[in-house]
Length: 288
Image (cartoon, rainbow, N blue to C red; front, top):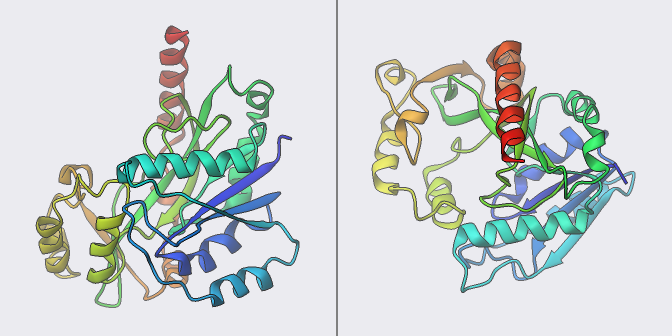
């Protein structure tokens, strides 16, 4: 027990696992990949899979850390977000309560997973009785918006990412609504830096599919580029003002992007993290 267990959800963007898995492999004690037995999304759409990905996983897994967990993760009577919650819960039970349960989406890339694990280990005492001491561990996401003009447009402020928990009673995706402990760690999130067809498919098949005005969002996504992004505002797909401004970095691949931009400059200040952690401690102290 008290091991570092990392879980991934296998879906239509499974090719991105070739980037995200190597970034956590060395520091993970075990890795679990949840695969729907019929390759269905949370909305019930079937996606095609090239079996080469399973050959890649087998060849890459030199230390035999990876478990492929196949199950029925789609229930037609449930909404997409309810299927999202259900799959994450089932995956975490497979990973084993009593360990750190880290869930990383395929399109999320840790800049320094070793540091995240080091920070996580400071809170190992929460694993002694997880059900009575439920916590979530947060990092921060740099949201990648669009490849254009030889570079990437990205959201100029990092957003919270709930990456780990000791007790997986998920309420909305990875959010258990229990106490959050913030850590100064950064991930790149390749959320919208895809083709327009890929974005539309994602919006139709993920947990928030009924919250997005796809046509309105895609008009803005198509329009923005390196020349006009400074004059445009409001880029989030649900509540636009949450992603108010974009910035630009040169690079045509994720590896070039990571190399060309120091992600740490977008890490919130130590005071901000202290303030958030104090607020969470006090809030949940009152709840008790």
